[in-house]
Length: 337
Image (cartoon, helix red, strand yellow):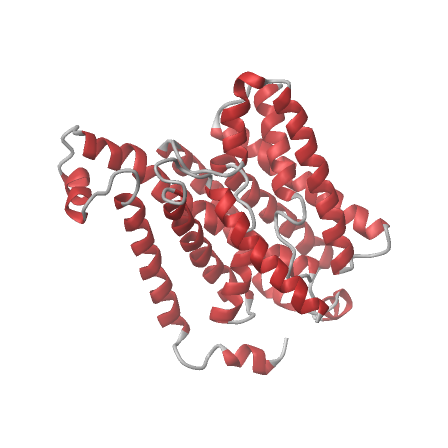
């Protein structure tokens, strides 16, 4: 991490101005989420729905259907964006993410098992199951990579992709044996914010804030982890404690996102790259920017998903997967060059 790299982001707009712009874009994206869809509404329609709710179809759609997804989408994006920043630093790999490390697959598997096998349906129960699945998956991936010869960036991703494939295969087996729920859960597993109750956001918010708070508390230690472990240890960083706390933060953030919206693909891959370009390498700023960029990315993807196969709605996870796949191929090509 060079001084030049860190200083480069101080040129041009100040960081405060950049955060203000990102916040404004997020507000605009959320307004678009409220107004655009199968039916289009004006800003006045939205204002009247919130200030003078009259039980009309327009008011019901805006308040009961559009508002929850306008909140859940950015909350999910912020969670995955922050998780992506921490994962890429831990793995020292810019193509690491909750997807490539298998965390989304592990969280999805535990949610499906919790739902089908144990009959759990509450957000708290599903969030706990998803967080546990993400935590166990992260421990398995890093444990196998370590035992196979060390935490090299390539080895971590290879192990993660293998675990992700195994998790998805098990999920498909479980779903195939429960055909009555197959269609609904397959749509959920593609990632979607449609038909989600506002309670998902209200109950998920404390989990997201907890995971984000842990990540922020680890920011200085994560700065040191840009170097190798011996350098970080010489700077006084308790490596084992930091890695453990990071696993907890990643698991909470990824698990909550999966419980709210299903596995929305590649957000945790794309967003950290954008955040670094906007605010630089320091994790205090990376985390804040990743939360805003992730919120914007998923909200705009949700709006676009309403129109790509209009009048039918596409799973938002399919759109983020396309965008993430393009970025991943570009990163791999850059590495090969």
